[in-house]
Length: 393
Image 1 (cartoon, rainbow, N blue to C red):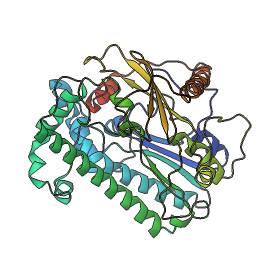
Image 2: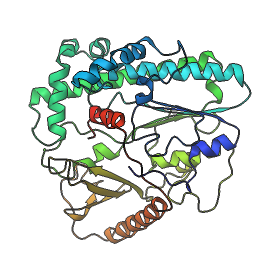
Image 3: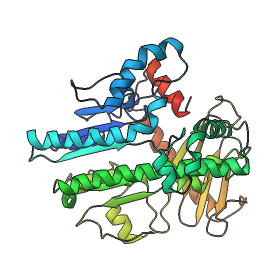
Image 4: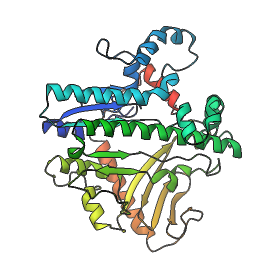
């Protein structure tokens, strides 16, 4: 597993050096110690560590203590990941862990600011919605169908079987119910911050790393993971004094824009050439530059219905056009303003050459950064077990 090069400072390292207390909690092993993204966090916890009992005495929630007690039995029979049966409870455990940490820091070090990164996985298959969340979306009768719905989703993701029309509706309902659970957890955090008097001087950012494809495209669509439904993700941000609240903005922005945004809010001075492909969100929202090109990539391991070969796709887009670089098809160019469903690639277009050049420049920068000293680390068995439960491997 490639790790983030030591030559690249993480945001947590930068803020720690500015005097911030730093805490991270991840429910996905890709985001954390395995890839080096735990650097700079004085308190770091991920799901595998939660279930291995990395807690102070009597601090672990009862569900974690139950999981640890059951682990010898589960290891004996190997019928399921230790992680999988508790997926639907990880969000409440995560929220509880965050609020306890804030309370402890507030007592020990009340005058120092803090930075928290939390990776929730509610809206990532396999889905384990609660009965209450299914009732909230009007689908209470689906509560007992967890195995069948997740198995159908597993088969579809690996391009082995299409959803039936009825199953597609059920999978969407499960995803929506899990999203409702995530909303509930975010509401708990906001209420907690408000009760502590911290709401008005805290920057909140809620975002996703990718969207969802749940049967909207045919199983044999080899570029489904580059579609707009996958690359257009929610980004909610609140920080009084830096952003005007209550508005939805159509500016072209990227998740990486959070990096200079948080640095700016923390008073960290910018450095020349530090992040050439991102900019602070307050600047982006004020300029609304429709011509700005944003970049992304995805690795799709099941393009042929099996884990190998793994295919890399690269994307460059602005408000009007989108370029996809596919290992099988080369460069595919779309006019997404006229063809939002990306139903027809355009062979010749005056803008295509500009997008190709911009994408190649971004890839060159990305590769130069990735090759500046990063090492690799073998994947522990328990981490592989969790990734398998999440459907990655």
